[in-house]
Length: 157
Picture 1 (cartoon, helix red, strand yellow):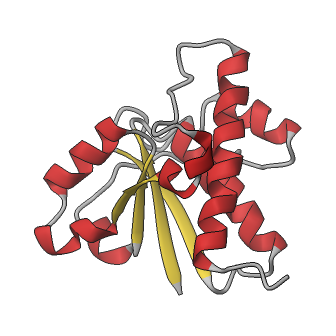
Picture 2 (picture 1 turned 180 degrees about the horizontal axis):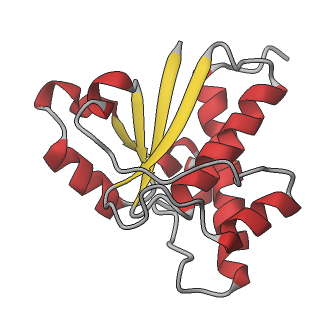
């Protein structure tokens, strides 16, 4: 089983959206028993809270259910537990590199490295933006999640 962790700042916008989108893709391909996914934040601002209501609403309009998810913070065990730890932006990646044991740093990557055609490195934080910012985040995450799944399990077609 491959275990993937998505990481943003507070685990209420970007990383739970990535978790929800990726989980839906896994389920659609019948791979729930092969790939496990979770999300966490670099900071404990919102531990135990659901995703931002705007993230939940934007995702729901596209058929993704984020409502059951709850925020948590990255802990030391995550570096052992997960095969891939995907940062939503370069700031998160830098923070994770500082916290990560040196022998596990190869597990850290930028999420959008799985969507090189986008020409973007970071998924922008929509928290202080308008609804369009949440839609843009979903666009990026849907593309990145498809690229990640293709990397982990190439489509047999």
